[in-house]
Amino acid sequence: MDLGLTGEVAIVTGGSRGIGRAIVEGLLAEGVRVATGSRHPEDWSALPTHERLMAARLDVTDPASIDQFVAQVVERWGSVDMLVNNAGKAYPGSFATLTDEDWHKDIDVKLMAQVRMARRVLKDMPDGGRIVNLSAIFGKEPNPRFFASSVNRAACTSFTKTLAKELASRRIRVNAVSIGFVHSGQWEGRPDEFFREIVERFEVPLGRFGEAEEAANAVLFLLSHPASYLTGVVLDVDGGMAKYL
Ligand SMILES: NC(=O)c1ccc[n+]([C@@H]2O[C@H](COP(=O)([O-])OP(=O)(O)OC[C@H]3O[C@@H](n4cnc5c(N)ncnc54)[C@H](OP(=O)(O)O)[C@@H]3O)[C@@H](O)[C@H]2O)c1
Image 1 (tube, helix red, strand yellow):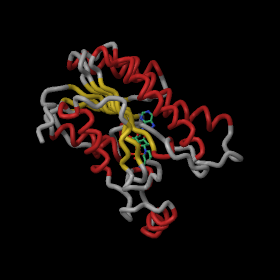
Image 2 (cartoon, protein in one colour; image 1 turned 60 degrees about the vertical axis):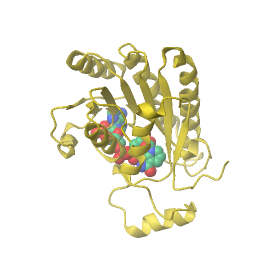
Image 3 (cartoon, protein in one colour; image 1 turned 90 degrees about the horizontal axis):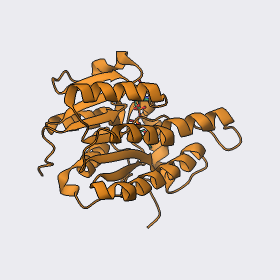
């Protein structure tokens, strides 16, 4: 399928590893000009060298850093057609162990990062642009083992659907991809037994973790022009794990 993205400009937050890097690679293969940002430049060496790729420092929890990053992209390429809010980090813990600080940090890197990035990028996004937010299955099917994620990802789902309605008059589509368990930087270094145990405990019907490229494929589709009638969708990439209808 021709995704029709050649020549467009995309920002992908947190593209240095994991799902973000797979999204960057997928967009480059589609002929897109891609800007990615993260906090640790030493990790960018894992990215491909490409004339259509720029990597720069970005902390999605810092409005000044966001402003500086987006300004650099616009200075280089003029506008931003697509935004992928991928950067994220888990603050694991039960209700009993999560502190106020954990809650603030979790909401800051998840919900508020998506809010701030969208607000800034929208100033330079033409009508017809697209936003895809990364989220987690636990936002739709809460689980106390992932307490903060369950609560804050539910807010991200509402953010996606509410923004989709607000921006529809500009033909800007806003969708989300909800991840179950996907191999990425955050799971690196664990033994095979760890993955088997998670898959069994959470009853993943396909019987395995997903690969970063499989998550990226869903993101690319939602960004693409063949998905032109999809907005406010939260697409599960979870190997069938979610139990709701
Ligand atoms: N993999 C899964 O099983 C899974 C499950 C549910 C949801 N998700 C969601 O999917 C997205 C991608 O996850 P992943 O597993 O691919 O993560 P990952 O491998 O840990 O990569 C996270 C990326 O985000 C960047 N990042 C983290 N904090 C940042 C900040 N404050 N500002 C800018 N960049 C930041 C990291 O770079 P720096 O550290 O250098 O900044 C890195 O590039 C996240 O939103 C995550 O919550 C993943």
